[in-house]
Length: 283
Image 1 (tube, rainbow, N blue to C red):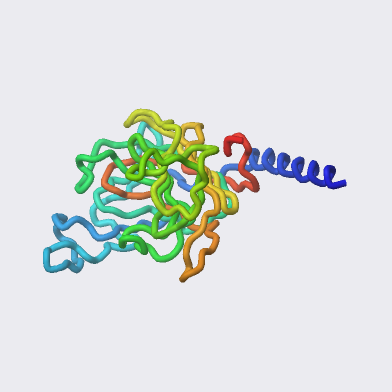
Image 2: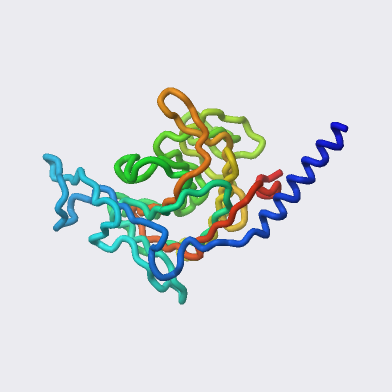
């Protein structure tokens, strides 16, 4: 009887996964404007003129520009390669934020780099990011982003995990040395209560200037990052601290970062899922 019950559960899981894969995709970008989203910009660089914001004694802005205020055109809908796309200039740090919260879903988008870079990243790899399960106030972390889990979108590093605002995960990986970051490795040592960067593995992205497909799968306390069809990060037991206690963090908004580099996004879409397919988990 126990064996029959176990088999029934496996069959139910498999059917759920198949049904999830056939669920309809819902576009999150309509190709015309930012319906369903709001913009946020943090404190700008000191050299940007004409902004009526508070500064410190050294002349640095200490006040965020805020929600749906975009004096320099950081966020725009443009035509890129013959199709509508979101263009984020990166000139001021901030994020395009979904108005809706999401839970148990498969999200995918296409992204490619532009040519412009801005201080303080003009001599560094182009950087952006897909933040998920975003909660709390706009600018709650470093006056720029919300508390969240980040699927890094950066030249040669797409798929890395960054904890934003002190979120916590468990992850399998190997540490080359005490001074080097943890590298994701399926079947590796389980690092519990991890709240630092994790390097993606394997590397799976196209050269700068070409469109890349980035996906995340999130169901319950588990998240998967994928780049161009390859899984390169699996995180489990997603959580955050509330006071002195750790609590699950399994839903929230989505943010697309503005972080010092020109970047384009298109075909942003989502669908509900009940289970992460075994092949996506690498099992």
